[in-house]
Each structure stands twice: as C-alpha cells, then as structure tokens.
Length: 497
Image (cartoon, rainbow, N blue to C red; front, side, top):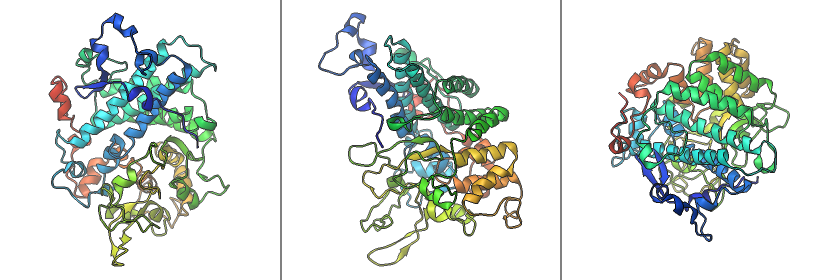
C-alpha cells in the first residue's frame, strides 16, 4: 500500500525545538528572533519560514500528525501503559532491579519520577505541538487548494487526531495542560491543569465539527486516513467519558447502520474465525473491520512499530514462530495466567492472540513463557504491522453494553464459533449478567489492544477487579501521577492525590 508522505523527515527534523516544562516542544528561534529577522530564511535550507507555502506542504504537515499517532500508540505510549500494562491482562516476567518503572506501573505502585510516564507524557505533548502548528498554518493560509473542501478536510483530520491524543491524556492523568494553539516559551508557563470536564467538552465540539468535513471513506494512497466514522467512534468514547450514554449510543448506532464495516474482515463473504486471524496478519492493512488504524511500514528506514520487540520474551532462547533465529525481546506485557484461563474451551481467539511458550531449539525443551501473537511480524528487525485502535467488534460490544441488547454481543461470539449469551451452552455460571458477559467478551476479543484498563475504569469496576487479583490499587491510583519533571520546571502544576 502506498503511504501518505509525512513532513517529519523534512521540516520537523530540521527545526530546533526546546522542551518547556516538558509540556510542548517550542522553536527556539521564535522566542529570540526580532520581527524583521523572520523574513530572512536561507533559500537552501528547509525552514518554517519557507515551508507551508503550497498544498503539498500543508498536507505533509497534517500527515505528520498521523506520525504522532504512530508514536503515541507504539509500545510505551499512553494507550500501552494505561490500557494494558496497568491492567490484569499482563505482567512483567523478567523484572529489572535497576529500572523498575514498568513493574511499578503494573503493580500500581508508581512514583512521580517514573521515567516511563514522563516519556509517554512528552511524546503526547510533542504531538500536540506539531498538530497545533499544522492547524494554525491551515487556518491562516491564503493558498487556493486544488480540490474544494480539502483545506477543511485536513483541518478536520488534524483536530480529530488532537482530540484522540487529548482523550488519552485525560484518561491517564485527569486534568492536564490544554493548549489549542502554538504557545511561546513564556506563555507556556501559564498553561496549568485544565479541568477534565472542560477538556472533554471541547473535544466533543471539535469532533462534532470534524465529522461534517470528513468523508465516509478514502481511495488509493489516502486509505488509512481518519473518516467521519473514525471521528464518530472517537466521539462515542469521549461521550462515555462524560457519562453521556445517550449521545454515545447514537454515534455507535450511526456506525453500525452505515453498513460500511463488517466482522468479515477478510471480505471473503463468510464470517468466522478466519476473519479474526486476518486482523493480525502482518500484511493486513485497513481491513473491512477497521475504523481507526495506526499505519506502520515494514522495512529498513521505514516507519516501524516496536510492539513485537517490546512484548516478546526476554529470553536468549526465544525465537518467533517458524523461525530458527533467536530473538530476545524486552519482556513487557507478558499475558497473565488469569487472562489465559479466561478463554473458553474451544475459543479459537486464544491461539490467535497468544502463545503459552516456545521450544528451545538447542535443548528441545518447552519454555513456559507466554507472549502475545497479535503483533507477530516475520520482519522482526523492521516490523510494520498496522495496529487497530477502534474496530467494528469494539463498536458492537460497546453498543451491546449501552443498549443492553445481547444481539450485538452474540455477533462477535458467533464469529468465534461460540455459544450465544442466553443459550444453555453459555458459561452463565461465571458471567451471570449481560454486563459481566460483555466485560468478559471485551477482555478476550480485544486482549492486548489497549482497552482493558480503560474499560474497567470506565465501568467503575477497576478497583474491585484488580484488588480481587491481588493488585494493590485504589480510587486514587486510577490516574497516573503527573511526571515530577513537569512539576520541577513549573511548580504551579499540581500533583494528583
């Protein structure tokens, strides 16, 4: 698949940025140059003063917003560490005494100086800065675009990407600094923590407006960009964060009734477990089930993902399925026995989602070291498997939850070849209510896809579920501490309890 070209390898890698209280990166020259000097740009050097001068460059600026999503949804980003690492789905099998940041997140024993949190925070705000800059350039440009509505569409894409990043920030930290424009180093100190409710209200406004200027689909090299349905799905999640179930239901309903998406991910006309397997093939890009998807490309000097490396076993004998080349990973997000045991007998999603271990090629012994298969890519040095952020099964299960209608739950179960909820063969002794059945189904269907802890917090079940499994959490631990490095630079930013 062709890929829309980002400007990150052009302007943004050449622009000197300085982090200000780890909120955003700001161009150093903007704070120091005199007004007249801003017109004196070397013609042989790509700088901000001679960029954003045509439609192609403005499109590249928005494309770099997609690159920021790739960074934020990569291993170690907010969705990873909050959605999975902080959940009961995973644990750290090979612990590190020298740098226990990941283990501390997994145990809910997090200090404010946790470097993993600081990196995730900085990555998010770097993305916010880049997207705010693209939005400002689009809003002030006098360029006449070749296609009617293209400028408005690019603005809608950028604001939707920004909304998704801010949604992750407020879920993980609550109120956060909320710049909606490029700010100077001096002004950045005035951006303190905005109330979460205020941020969510603005995200709703941005996403509702964005939907009006986004298409229902794309063709050619533009496939993978955010559509109106992608904006609707993100908006549904924002409404749920506001506890606005009525509007969330309406957004999900519009996606379902569009008939654009299907559980027939491989588009062969039959809905079965082969569609689930298709979702996680390294070559699958933007399937019929995909609503919002992060785009990666395999190969050297491409936009690679790091999920497989980070989640593979930390063991010198490990090798990927079908390979004789040893490949030691970082050992993060190891599937818990609790998750493995939750798969129902005969559920094909288990063997498609994880392996319980591997054979040592030298000794022939089986090593019980579970790992996820959802990011399997035989191009392990430079992997490029896309990552589904919101897919149709997710929408169906959310809709079942909000409408109390098991029909949509059972659509997902039937694809896996499992008994309907409400039938005699369903394991109702374990999942006695529809709410518990949906919680179970979302855990299994969406395992390792960065949903689990978000789901438990959203439904108010996080503390009870995690404490029942020996994780020492509490209501105050459902948000991360603000990184200490942020507070050190700007003491006016307050810490979470």
